[in-house]
Image 1 (cartoon, rainbow, N blue to C red):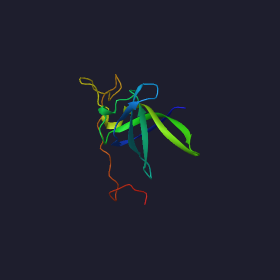
Image 2 (image 1 turned 90 degrees about the horizontal axis):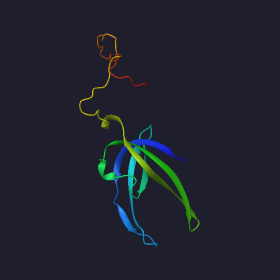
Image 3 (image 1 turned 45 degrees about the vertical axis):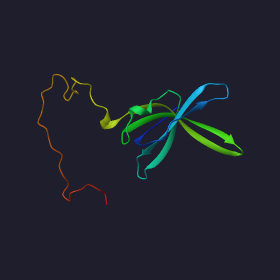
Image 4 (image 1 turned 90 degrees about the vertical axis):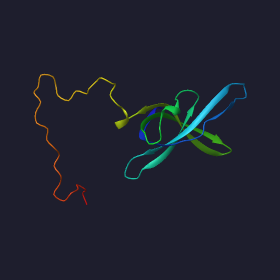
Length: 128
């Protein structure tokens, strides 16, 4: 089951590595994102092996994480791991490639005047 969540990268934890019982080298790294909402939540994800290179991401970046949930039992207790297998930058961090401009007007239509957003009479638009 593949899931996705978006949030802000808040922590890159130390990379771990070792050798398995059969002699295979392995690496693993955890990272934490803050998931926005009325009550923001933090979630820790794990990247195993070379699937994602976390060195290319900076603390504070908005990212989308594709992951699977893995559950396992150990000494009568159950544990879950959020196993990340893909990370993408989102929001303001996705810059247009150099030399390309985003389309702002449909082709063949004249550009109209730009209207500025109107401020509310009381200075904010909170519902309370």
